[in-house]
Image 1 (tube, rainbow, N blue to C red):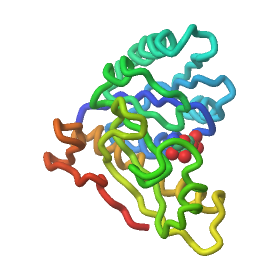
Image 2: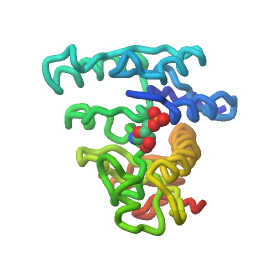
Image 3: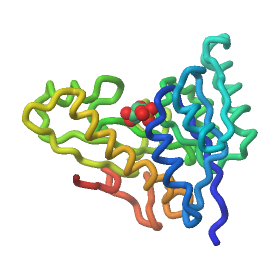
Image 4: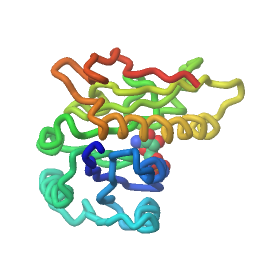
Length: 216
Ligand code: GRF
């Protein structure tokens, strides 16, 4: 059997991606094991999801720290208690310091609700609609020092429909997030996915610049 892959998930909110990861890592043939969920907000519903699944939780309130560096140093200390092979950002609404990102180089994943490199940052669904895009979607990527800019692992393309609102589009994109994040985490846990010198690699082959593409 493949060795277990310890995963720590960072959240700030609802944690629906966390839930998808919890569900996908229940099966014995998935080597990923979520060892802890850490939130910077005490009221994040994702904490309840983790507790319901018997996963250790911790709250580290960024407001209690004197600046980003101090918070990130405490965060690293908290995360490393769980000896993670992989750290997963699942709606963690904090910009991370270069020190943090470098500490987890090659073992830090994020999910973003757009077809990166389009629409880095917030309000992605509204921006895609305003631009009149025919297609929108979501991306999983390795985290580097460039915000929402690291090598892409997988993208799901979601066609925009006539009459879509930011909310209706967000719902369909979210459903795809719940599909591609567990996929990427599983690939990593199985040793199939890694960050090479020139970008993300799957099964020893470089992935295209878009990552692995899924059309829905
Ligand atoms: C998702 O849209 C994700 O792409 C973004 O934050 C949101 C988190 O949603 N990074 P949830 O907390 O997983 O429901």
